[in-house]
Length: 375
Image (cartoon, rainbow, N blue to C red; front, side):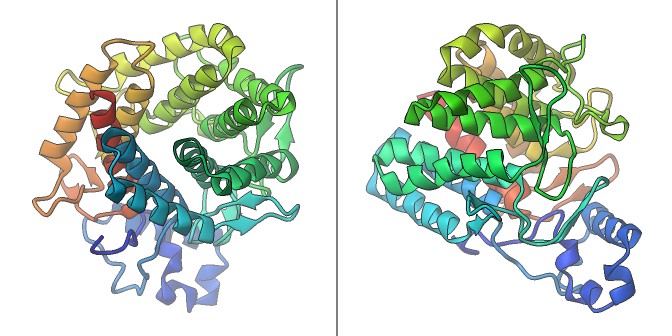
């Protein structure tokens, strides 16, 4: 609580008041990419010099809320409930309204990806889906309609505001934001997860059907090895640890929400889980970033892996054993003596910046879910 969940982010460099004061740089795609990468890769946190403010991030707030909800389920204490409701209130206060009037969330910084540019506050599916998941859990734990209504509104954002690519009959892929037409597998599957999860609670077959079509799109693009690329375009052909964890987590949640999905997607889930476990982790729990490379060892990869394994413990009885190894490895090798988790351990240096969304929220959520699952 020292910083009230506010902090820096690996991608917040474009919030720099120094950068914003130079119009020629601000308007250049190449300059935006270079500036962002320089801040991400620097072993020193130079954001104070560049006048990058500390802020809350919607996805980070959602993850902190999910951690508090896991703590509440494990302890049933008033303090845990108070913490969860405080974070959920902050999450609702940071929500946006899409062009069609639906509830959604975006990032608190301008973001230049290889595919498109999203100005600060642009609604995007990833923070929106994590917010929806936190609200859905809260609606079930606290039986509170205030949380279910915005989660249901997120479905309207997905169906009305995101761009759609339908490549085969019975499939659908949603864009990352209303501004682009990218086909990012984990992002589209997060949308499918929201639709299936909300539809299961509200008994809306249309939402479930659309969600299953989204899941089918991703399942049908699994590689023979069991891997998934990041996306459908040629420049998105890599496979990494935490995006694979996102896909496995979403499939597990979709299958829990719908009995038909359990049969249809079980094969893809088992193949993907086997590939991920065999290729992305060392025997001591070291979470590799890519299948072919030990470095960077990233707190985000560790946290997302522990959460995924907690979700998959029904499918794989050994999942929690691996989750515990990963958590212990991260504590030993990525945690500061002050308690926070470093961003990345690279081959020749460690980036010790305590990023709120990327590292702190993921590791807190991971440890809370692990404790809950082992109860």
